[in-house]
Length: 375
Image (cartoon, rainbow, N blue to C red; front, side, top):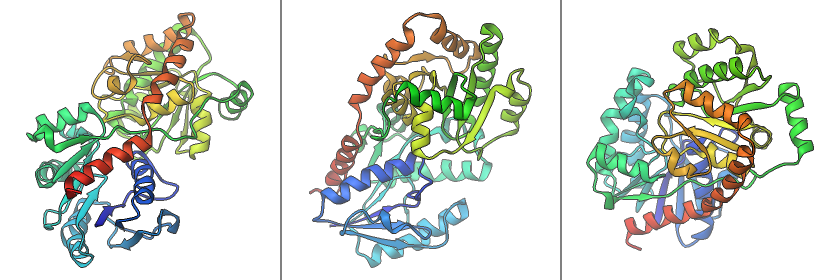
């Protein structure tokens, strides 16, 4: 069989949520199924190391699709021609975009529908594209893969898709994430926070990630406890809005907020493993990979009590109301106030994370492919 895959977000040294999903699943699937041909379809020059196996062929289609108009050109004009030329039996799209103009069987991976619930968090042209096309992609797909039971329910209810058409493939966690020694933690804190203990946020700086309430909660925590703690923010400021900036500028303790931008995985591992707790308080997530990364690193987690996050965290994290800075601040305080709590959360997290693996994710993606091709 010839399986074509949208690998636009498989970019060396710039892998984020969907990119990691691509990397971890496709590495395994291509190597474990040498009987099939895989065509990785990029929209830019690619790193040849991403040809994971001898049965992988790479194709570059221009233009680079990073704008709604270019999405239309790439998916509706250029992609159908390529799929026809290679005689693809199936097209798999890990970022959910499909080609309405192609008759080839297609699987969409929908990680979440945040744009349906919080459309104002996106530039208007992006929001219009998503809300117009993704319901159509959902109906076009022969199968849909998503990353949590929450997202499956959301897709079913929002797009009126029968549950039997949707497969859940829970995300995994990189093997690099594990606890580190006290000496390594001390060195990390010395390097990034002058040796001071810190909370950490990992992810894109986007409105739905709820940085405004996290900043307000951190200010409350500092005012009440008088502790020297820092707040470390790891992620690109791509979606830094005027509202996020307004709240940040009004913080009493804004000098204790440290922005590190995007970090290499090895550095991120040490930053997570050296933190007092991960504060991951989004108001909408399809999964939340940083929760697992913190668990695996032996770090306590504070996360939201809505959407997918309780499903991922189980009883191994402190669940808070993301719309309440007070709720977030209380959880941060409890890490210090309640004796033994942090150690209990760490122990539960190390057990919880054993339920997740990228091999399991890859197996479930492949099972969806098999059902689509009737193998």
